[in-house]
Image (cartoon, rainbow, N blue to C red; front, top):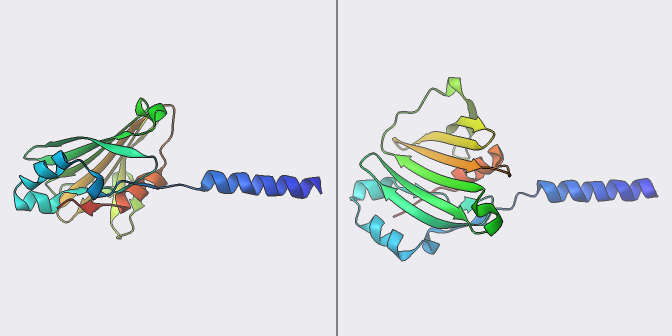
Length: 163
C-alpha cells in the first residue's frame, strides 16, 4: 500500500514539474506609446516587425528600440524575484543572413523553420531563425534560474506581426 502511495505521489510531482505554463502578453496589452512609435515607422518595417506573445513566466513590455538595421523589444519579468535574474530581448534584423545551421544545434519551430541555438551557455541562450527574408533573434540572459530550449521554442512559435 505504501508503495502505491509513493508511486502516486511521485507521478503527481513529475506531472506538476513538467507542466510548462505559458503566460501570454497579447499585442493589445503593449503600452500605447509602443503602438504610437510603431505607427510612425515606414510600412515595410511595420510589416516585418513581430513580437512573441507567449512566455515561460509573466512579463511586461519594458523598452523598444529601432535602428535602420533592426527593431528590438525588451521585456522584464513581472515577478519581482525574477526581475534581477532574467533579461529577455526579441530582435528582428532586416536581412536574411543567418549562420549555417550545421555549426549549431537546431530546433524545429511549429511553422517548419529550423532555428539555430546560437548560444547555449550557463546564463545565456540565443535562438535565431530566418523568417520572411529577415532574421528573428530571441535572447534570454538569466542567472539563478533556468530557461529551457522548449521554453525558447514556445516563445518563438508565438510570434505575431505588430501592425
